[in-house]
Length: 362
Image (cartoon, rainbow, N blue to C red; front, side, top):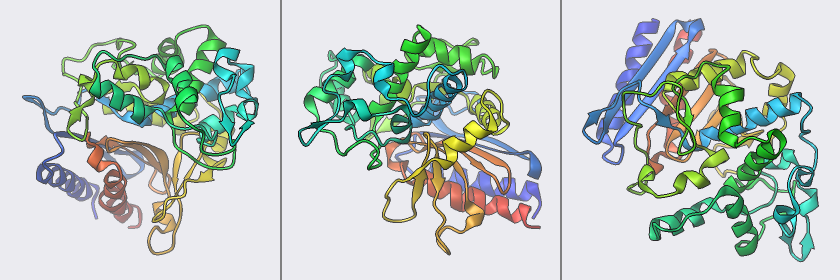
């Protein structure tokens, strides 16, 4: 099939999917494949009364974790940290004391940078519990550091470090605090200096923490969890922090992914380690392995054949940012609603990658 025919099919599938789902207020999809001569940048729906536009800044939720992982990798290559070092080397006693006490044993000193990146520290998740407190009490506010301390005082760890994958924003708050301690700068400033500015991501910023170099004339696309617009929750940006927070038009996210796959900012061997040093996420159906904030499809014959193999990052509001090596394609988008938490990946595989493979195999 021709590239133009495939573009038409993907666009039609995307627009129909958004239009028929009443929960989805706005959605965005970018598919870029130079090898296949494809570049689609789509927007559907509205932000309030403003029609969705491809130039709107989008918050891709936990996709921002891959930016945090990349900054951590840059510091690793600068010999300012080591993936295998215990986190206590970079954090103060106020945070470390009693951070991980599991079944009467204190494992705080055994947590490494690698454990945080791979979500295997065994620490519990504070995000959704604090999110509920914020929605119930608009006056409640808490910083990332305070959130970590709240977690160790109110929650129980789930496993010994390194023994189990357990997805938690707590790990990425700690990474953000480590970055700040090493650089002596606020995390958002480091993100601009190490990522946004070198990649000319002029419209990118950290939600609630910074401004883009060039302000957009369009409002940020709203995103929702069970009907609640996340931008309306007072103080929520504080617990987004290094676990998310990146907000930019999809074209800026594409610059990031092209740099990551093109060996800019970090070396190929470092990226390979981020992808290959992984753990099974333990999903009961089609599985994923998790590297350093990188999700990889776990190959399952018939259900998920090798030709679909891809890697990237996922956000809880139906957001994704993936690279499909076989077609050398970048697929970035969001349906901006929690109900699409799993469905976005299904859409990518069935409605995007499946179609791209028809060109690749001709």
